[in-house]
Amino acid sequence: MDRLKWRAEKEKREKEALDRHARLHELFVNDRLAFERERKRTIDEFLDSIEDDKMRDKLQASQHSWDKKMRHAGSEHNRFVLAQTFFWSHFYETWNPAIQQLNLVLNGNRRGSQFRVDENPA
Picture 1 (spheres, rainbow, N blue to C red):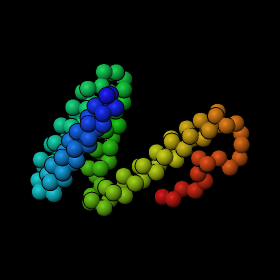
Picture 2 (cartoon, rainbow, N blue to C red):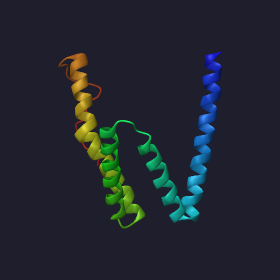
Picture 3 (spheres, rainbow, N blue to C red):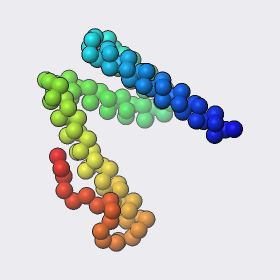
Picture 4 (cartoon, rainbow, N blue to C red):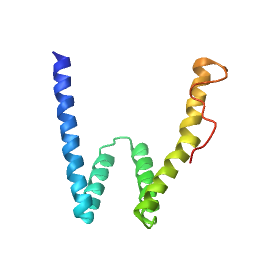
């Protein structure tokens, strides 16, 4: 019974997410200012829901930094390039070292790990 309830709730969440995405896309295309207000409201609502003060402050600082960098991008293409650059930088500086460390803890010092990334495609 719980599985059926979970599945129904999952489908409801997916429909709500798709509806929200369609609405935001429509705003993005037709009313950029309204889109930005809605984006900011959604982010603020999420940040306000975080109970841990340190985590909330850290995430707010991260969001502020992201917004500031994107504001000075100059064009849609530059924003896209910046987002890619930030992603790959974070991947290589944060995620990959953590994955490598976890791999060492779990598997010892075996060579040829499936998580090993030697080249930066960016």
